[in-house]
Amino acid sequence: MNGLLQAGSLVGVLGLAVLGVHGASVAVRIARDPLRRHAFLSGNVPAEHAVSRFHVRWYTVSMVFLAFDVEMIFMYPWTLVVHEVGVSAIVEMFGFLLVLLAGVVYAWREGALRWT
Image 1 (cartoon, one colour):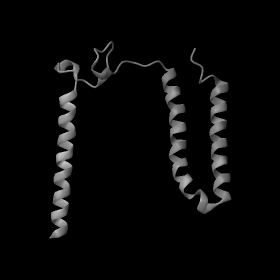
Image 2: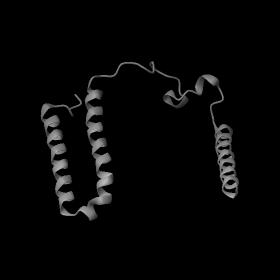
Image 3: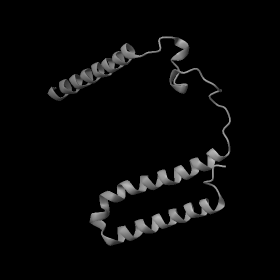
Image 4: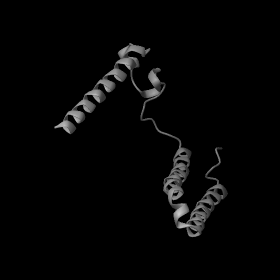
């Protein structure tokens, strides 16, 4: 029964915290106009439609970004186990980084990173 009371108290405190933060954000917001409350362009008047077309070079840049983002997803857990695994973990990570470097060199050679 004591644990249930503690859990209920915790949920109550959490609910009050959420309501407090929401109330504070409502109190300090600048845009009171309902047309300017949109998340698109941070409340500024949109210059183009939200689903307008992008230039094809942005897709290449996004793919290169995703490649490095996935690299970081693999490197964070690696940092936690590298001490336990030893030298083989270091060799494997450098092999992984060499494969990524080969991809960047290929993209650079093909002109995928050129803006003009």
